[in-house]
Length: 571
Image (cartoon, rainbow, N blue to C red; front, side, top):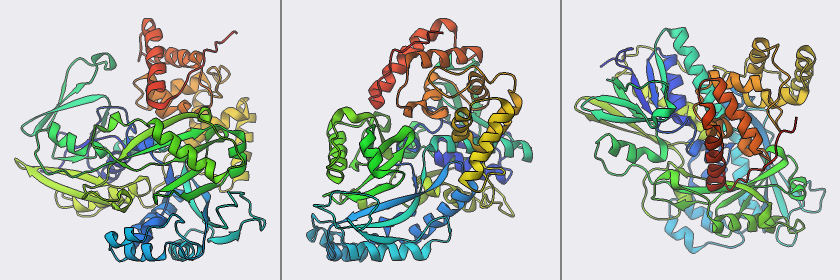
């Protein structure tokens, strides 16, 4: 069946891949309905290491195709979404010249069982890392990412890692995306704009259940209080795309499709450390170190002069939403940060929050989780003539090309004679983007003067939506001076976001729109004022503010270990 407005493509999952596929389909004039049980970008998208990277360690497994593809996509995303994707220098500390060569050789040859016999506590040596970086450099096409180099510790090295353990630093460049949640929002903005341009339908339903009846799907709100509509909606799609990530198998079971397991996720936990000394040590660069178990450990510069540390890699068979960082994992990450910088005295109290998610990896035999492919693939079945596609694997870096592959594979089913792609389409917020940091700061200064608003507010809003802040300022010129408590964000900006960004709950605002989750200090009063904005937008009843705020405070502590302060607005 060819998709029409009456029979659209139904996408299950509003994460990074669901958003990218919706955007790519609408670019080809294919109507789309996206449904998620939770908010957009609330799964693995928000629980990653927040890197846009080529996958240096994939070279060890001879996955040249994935590395080359990832590096090409890194270049594209840096050019098409510069407001989100920024070059990041990374340092790899190494202990010896030759260690790890035999182990890596067997991995390269696909002989994993032999590789483990040659495991070494010294990790990968300088020569091995240099070979990998040389290959990496050969695949880079963007001049914004400099070539690698090696520095001897104590020889004007910019980082002072543990000199009793490490002898060299190998430096290379990848990219960081502080807020992939905002990247997903940007893609849905573009999807809506494409639907308008192409004159096809696009709908996004968050916090909705689905119930399959033959080849139709009934949508109903998870909580009736979260919906303005009382009636259920029924969709009879032309085809279904299961983009629910680590929930993929459960999603299929939920719509009565039996199958062998397609996914075998692993749990990855991260913590955020607020310690002035540690952040001073790493500056604006990142560390890519190797734990004794061979897993990479990242220390990355993060929001508010904090440091993001990750990650673990543990098989996880429970429901993905139940993944929470354990005390054991947090101490593991803290220990490795301390070992890298023994001159900095870290304690458990320096961890101000944590998060944990489940990677949507393909089902694989038991073994070393690091060896499981980070590539993507597609599984297609037909149920009573209805095509059902499940997306397997993938990562932040390759979401756009994954979506392009999906549309290409559906060319006949979508009845497309020619396929459009997003290879050269800027993401919203990247239009007329300044080419240098100096030019960005000049624009901030000009906007601050033109609209009589503090430059720190301009910078805070720019970080969330790039050049789209110009649209907000033009539309809200007379309402810029009232700020949300202990933030640099105007109340009118919050209301503007609520109105245009599919906001349903206070948690949506805090965690995935305003990114206040990552603010060093978050006050109850801030949450109260955000809840009041939801009331103004008709999303919440005034009488429910105290209960809603308390639920958010409880959720922040339970899920992230985030403690909310009791400061109040005294004005």
